[in-house]
Length: 424
Figure 1 (cartoon, rainbow, N blue to C red):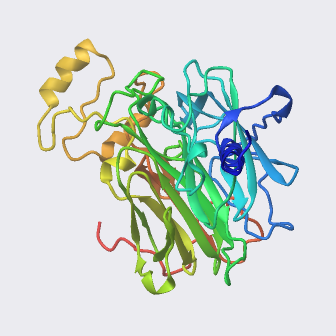
Figure 2 (figure 1 turned 180 degrees about the vertical axis):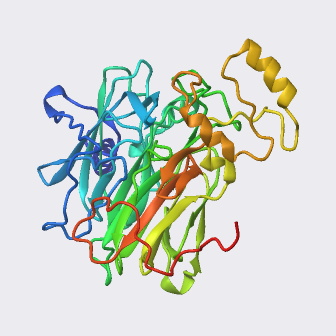
């Protein structure tokens, strides 16, 4: 007998089933697009927001179907170049690690198809978004795993939130996230605020253990990492951030690594305007030159680029601006290695003792043969010589009167504005 109670219960059950992630039918699945990181970037056009620029990355395209924005995300193995001379066998999304940045607007209906091309199950969690529990993407808790070859679909309305969020698996996290499965999920506000950014950048922070001479990250390492990346690139492979003098600049940082990162900018002070938990009222913002981005969080910072020049932007953990570090090497500062150097050179021609006077000479090793697929600890040349950095380091280039955001080259210092030598 169909009673009012049964009718209500069946209606609730039907509504609940619509809020549970499900397998997609083959005819539903949109084609996957793999835009190239060096391809053209979207312009503002008729968008009600400034498009996000993901340095060394891309924005995920979508199609509009029945009022919903449809995205197709493919979890798959990815070969990622950290910098010229080093290719890492990662896992990621749509041919990239991190995956392409997803951009939507507050209140959008989204339909996200996820195809698993790995050899083990996976899922996707929408980190920081307050969505129905059945769409939360935690394997075993809110859904079965997405098995190899399967496509599942997540569908929900973007809630009354805007800011920077993330997507990543909640399945075999130790391996899948260590291999680079993560991406940024940006929600623009429905009503644009006064003074929107002129430049909007998105950077994912991550750490890796890629042992010298190898290609695959080691997921068993918990603290002894040797590669530190902005969007899975290390300096000098990191793309520079080019802005025009007077631009309002937003930088969105996401951290799904195993370390906290104090990100420091030179020549400017920024304010933290949002976290993955929400927007920060103006009265709660204060200027600083270093923002701590803890593990599992995002931080949005904004500033006015009012100081022309080439400005360093980097993690202030000193060993996070190095590559391929070995933490078990003996400290040889002030140690006379001349006799030992000659003996080792008789067994290993070309050997060069390092570290007697400091570690800056490590950059000289950039031209020396080393283990295959392994970068020197310090890399990168500036207009005045070795920059002696690696890892989480890039350059904020602020320029007067530029007509495009292409890399303008090194800064030309006005006469009298540089430090100078006064004694030999």
